[in-house]
Amino acid sequence: MEEELARDLDRPAWAVRIRAERHARGWSQAEAVRALQANSDTALPDEPNVLRSWKRWEAGDVEPDEFYKRLLAKTFGNVTAALFPRHGTVSDDEILQGTGMETLEIISRLRASDVSAATLEALQVTADHLCSEYPFADSELLLIEGRAWLRRITGLLDRRLTLAQHREVLSLAGWVSLLVGCVEYDTGRRSHAEATRKAALSLGQESGNIDIEGWAHEMRAWFALTQGDYRSVIAAAKAGEAAASGRSVAVQLAGQRAKAWARMGDRRQTEVALEQGRDLLEGLPYPENLNHHFVVDPAKFDFYAMDGYRIVGDDKKAEHYATQVIRASTGPDGTESKPMRVAEARITLGVLAARAGDLEQAIAMGERALSGDRRSLPSLLMVSSELTDLLRTKFANDPSALEFVEKVRALSAGGIST
Figure 1 (tube, one colour):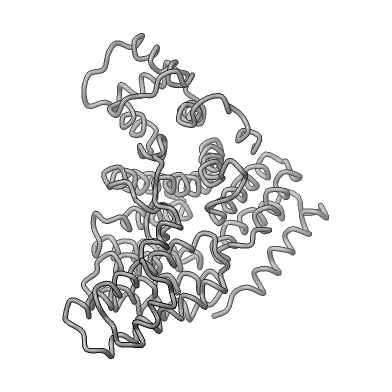
Figure 2: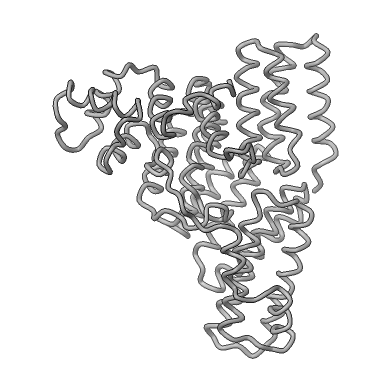
């Protein structure tokens, strides 16, 4: 299945994506054009004319204009920026340079009671940088660094601050608390993570930062999802959406609802949640920093859809979205910018291979997913359990299947604390 990533190198990525989206739905080009017409609020040219345009899009000869880009995304149930990615986003180096200060200078200013606007701005960029390291940084090192900065930031609350400065410090502490809580949960420290999440929620409420409130509720939804408490996922998502309606976090909350509904066997509600998230994401501005953990980038919608369709048993769409997740998260040199997403995509491909009776491919995908250095253990174990359940059922007497099942069991037993 991963061989598809090496194909179509002579065509633009958006052209490859249009054809892949059509194939995932089993449409001919003429059927795709009719779907396009059905989703348009305005009259389109006649079918033969649109079909000619469609053929040119898939061939990569002509890029659709903005009207058709949005209509294609709507027809495929996706967002425009996922089908037609933008470039030129802020790099890690630019984030680091944004402070105009080195870490030592920031710390020196804090020790000297310098709580100037420049110092607070430097702390904001530092917090953004920490959150941007989440996708790929070593978990234990990021946890140490995050906790250290959290102590420095909260230490400012003992200083004489203006009301505006006090709220800004609370907000900074809230963002870093969210990050620390996520990494704590990734590494199996459940009780610490929940305490940190509650602290972040309180900081968000006290500072009046609705985004922090929303993400604190999203963390609760994530915790509940990985622990199999799906009704609590729905409740936490609704609380977060009420607190931060229309914000970026609401997209991720919709994604968590979709994952929960899928696991409760309700495909209709799964697709309703995905459509609500898609509609909101389509209307949000394109993010400047795609690495920031508390920013929902357009490509993440594929990740939500992959999970939902895998669970409800739509193997063709699940495979399509898993392939897109790997493609979007892997650079030309093979470097994975979103290794945790890639790991879950590989587990998805492993599940699909197991369903198709291909044990060798199923185990190969599972092994690759577990071998990564950067992983969210609860999430990885949650999706891995789907693969091990299949292996126990379909390949109960195969030694290689049993060996993989035991490997996941040992990882689970050694990696989660309460």
